Image 1 (cartoon, rainbow, N blue to C red):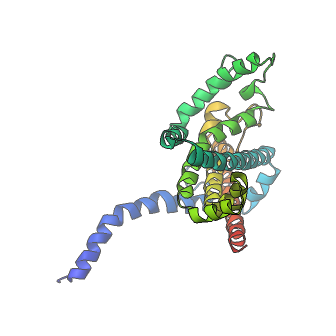
Image 2 (image 1 turned 90 degrees about the horizontal axis):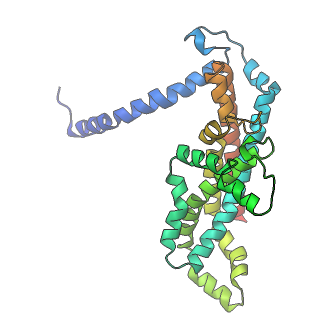
Image 3 (image 1 turned 30 degrees about the vertical axis):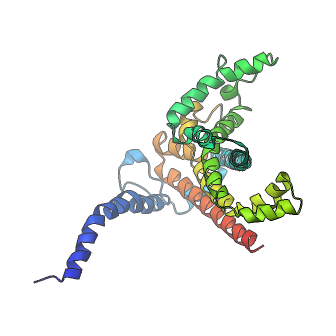
Length: 295
């Protein structure tokens, strides 16, 4: 049987993409379906594959009675929205100032972008040292006259704000780079017309720049919020969810439930709740963005 030239070309293309397709199916689609299935069971990891009992929606109902899950959800929301809010505010201000006032802005942008491309393990360890009693943050506060500065990562009150501050610091650089790129495409003639009409830099910023950058802001809010909801490494390395449950977040609690207590079905149910939360937030922001653009 002789294959046509077009069919041979198609088969060659499919052969090239087959490894990627197999990777997606085996390491992405199959785990997703499997996690959905076991979320309706009481499967313990130590029992082996197939040794489980179907419990229906019991896992999805029990998690809302779990104090650790509720606390982790609250911490996740506070950390995510708090970090995103300040990242967006500081980034748009810094990007505008750097674009308008700074000479040699490229090195400044690259310096701010370094935390984004640095290893999160190294960053977390450095911040543990900075927050330690002999670290520069504590020493700075003592030098300012504060005799008993908070024990940041060892304090139930200050541990989560300390993590949020670190995430803001590490996330601003990426947002500044995105905003800086967007600023290059803004219509200069509109700003020139506004200046002729007597509008100053501050008024132009609030009435023109923020409006023109709204699609970029929407993109950054969605992507940054999704990444913040999935935060794990800093919590694991810096606090392990403590003190108490003060810094426990959803992904970390899912991890401990699955691999410390071997409650795979329970952890899978929490994973799907997290997915639905992220999906709902994304839909809400998408609808809000459509209304904002139409407005």
